[in-house]
Length: 123
Image (tube, rainbow, N blue to C red; front, top):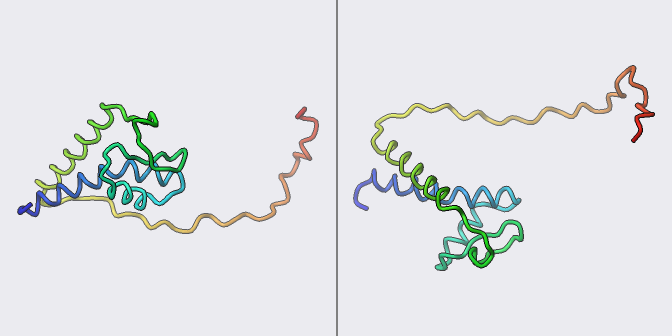
């Protein structure tokens, strides 16, 4: 592509199309970038990642099929955002907040007064 703006749009759509498989892999405790990379290396368009069984498989044979409406909507939304960013000369966005350390462990607080051992609850 000769036009830089079009190339930016193509990259946005490309990343948007990878987002679902990356998120599924990360939800399964895997590195989403690695899973997406392996899928991009294969020429088999039916190949996908089965997170439940942690394997790469023919998605049609495994019965894992995305509804057409979901795929179409994702593509339309990605194209819409890409088009918006290409035609926008300036953009305002929230500055990402730095994630700090989680709250410290409260340690042994010795139980809550007046509650006793909570025995006799019938468990």
